[in-house]
Length: 235
Length: 235
Image (cartoon, rainbow over all chains, first blue to last red; front, side, top):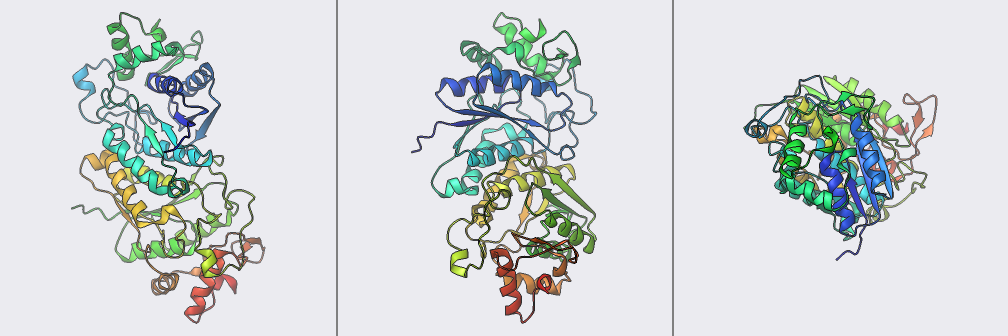
């Protein structure tokens, strides 16, 4: 049994990872080191949101890891591929989305693993969700379990008996439950950013406003509506 | 069964990866895409060697992926930690070396996975060796098998039935066998670089000469001697 309570939290600036951060804090993990990735995503507003979320929750450190932008190709999140709009639930969950980025979570988790080892931490939190984004191969429980197993063979820490755990508290939660729990834990969803196709807007705190019509916007919007609320980023 | 014969080859510029490249070519893999990593290692001579090796073997492409240098900490390869010298075989194989870099092969293989998927390739070659470097956790067959299993859950390619293979032709070869096979296949070991503590030398083709006394130098030197040859980098 490890008594290590420090944690690495992957923070994208989106609704899910902001909730994961609040959950890690609520569970008593400390210190918490947040990491975000600059991978040439079309919307660097994500990184501004991640910084705002990290500050809101007073993490011990927030590190932005730069990823060579030539690596990710063929995704609507990094290339000039149209982001689909106004899709219904059935369309959203059919097949692998154009916003899929090759091996993204594997690279993110690998960096988290390196940073965890260098900080002597044995806990990594990631906000993957297999409900809303069932088309992403690297959001499935089987994938996470396989990564954890690999990680526990990969490092000096593992050989020395410090077992690494990948925490995925949201993996089977519907969006409504994620938002409900986040609101209980004091997440400020107004400073999060989920939109795949943000529009510049100098008035908005993050310098962009969400499109309101891509899959990510619609998932949030419908979940807040279900709770008889308005998504604060759309206000 | 896949008929894909393209391959990604991880090329460090060292003796092992140069041999792996020659083996992949000999086995008929084509086109071959070599990738190297710039991760703030103390000896950028590695990257010059990798370029020379890639050119010598006429690969289809050679890409250098830049890795955020803040990630790797606490290794003699990236920090100012003394490289041990003149160790015997027993000393070399005891424990995890100070030249161990946290989660390095996991990050390298994750990038290779992303690039493989973006190039529609299902083959990754890596020159890990569990004989000479038995102290590195991420050079063991169990680790490689676990990474391959994870990779085959991680990507769209895998979901669509294109199974990825991590090829480790050297994993159980002693250094003598590696060099013998490489010489048969036309590897030019004079342009490879393995030393952990290279010394600037304007006369040398790569701008540095090996120290001749670190573990990496000694492993090569002794293996060439066993073959009644002199390591060409020490001539």
